[in-house]
Length: 620
Image (cartoon, rainbow, N blue to C red; front, top):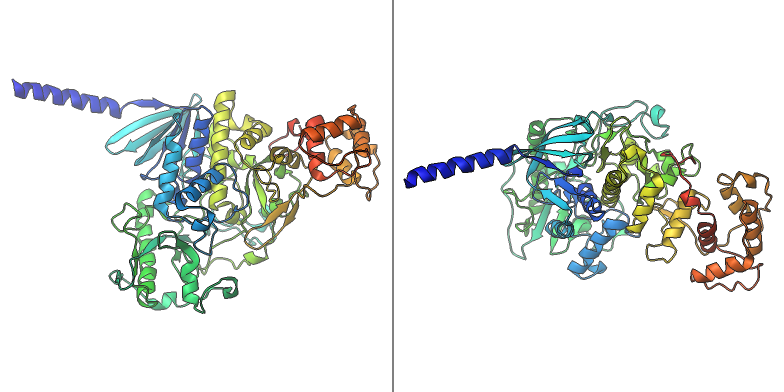
């Protein structure tokens, strides 16, 4: 009898498992990829009250920041926008402040990968509307009757997920390709993009990738030398200690020491992600199958082990061994490689170097549509591919920039938003937008756009740019890259909005590895400059004359406002500035106004940010 009961229980259990395997899950936003952008997309969408599901192949969140071991943040140190700033604050709290994470010279913020994963998982776990399926892979994707239908493999289970909005946050843009989105791979021709330093002809060459290693100092006298890897050749790494600008770094007179301090992490660990005769490798995996990628990545892992063995033997760092408390892998290497480049979407707009270099002079006013900001220079890794065209990226002098919203939206596919490194930018621009803080912001913007699609019953291409930007500002995001007006500034949101209209423009400055754009809030402004900025919005000012050399006063501002059709008194303007806590000595109308005060009054009286714009930045 007991045997019969056990058999019945077994059959019932088997049927239950089969039913579960065939179950269809419904969510409002589905995100494939729990990397840098996928994680922030999920957190943001959930915070806006939308049911959200992340599908992630590994058991970690963070992608390149954590699972790939690139735990040294490049750029945006003075623009900690949105969730990127929130994540950094958690790192500060964990390690004991900013100085505790400024351990290597490549970055102001370095951390142990497992700590980054832990903190991101804490952030995600706080969101009740967010589910995450780890160790899960997507198999197929299609759109039917306004819904995405995606089959998922998780262990022995095969599940189906339905969602009206899908975000591709994969490392290589695999989902958008399977969904039928148009894309490009490799370098663009200068004749197609108008970028002077782009190659003459397009090609399929992408940036070198890296299989990072994290080494741990096991103490003086320890010998953690790995077995000599197959095919090892010490001469391959002979120039690795040739740090290009040794005068820039405080260290002993030893280039190898200097090189090792590049990615020093807290906890006496070292991130090994070195381009010059180091562990970069050229492998183009973008359009390969998963099986082909896995096979090719064996070369990348082996190459990294060659470099580790070189560091331990030729350079004498035998006390540095593969960290045994970082990655949950048998070989102690990261779960995924660091992909610098992937497919690039052909979106509603394409962001080029010319848009970055001359944002206010471009035919498209894409700067008005910004949803993420970056300041890192355009940096490409091509040292390991002799076939790559010789491009002097040092010559590309650009200021900081903002990424246009239209670069996340496909041209012809509804219900899809693209994030990570697969947004619609040129190959050249990818060298800047691929960096961690930008990708984290792209994810946050993607999540916000997805949530608004659900709440407003719209497709991504139907969203109003200003609606998305306004929500980003509420979430401490940046839509303009103004370095001198931090998020803690009382007029941050107002200045961001007025800057995004182009009425008051910023001043861009190419600056080493942290490019800049300055708003100069305390500087006076001429009446001429203000009128020039307002004319697009208020055609009545086309005939208004203002002397170019005269600084704007309260009296002159009132005249300009009246010319737009607004009736306002000097007393009202002065009182409103004081209400805004701008305690300026405005005793008479002849007092000169600064750019901060003008931004406050424009936002108060004219509301130019509320005027609708197209996805390319033109007034509607």
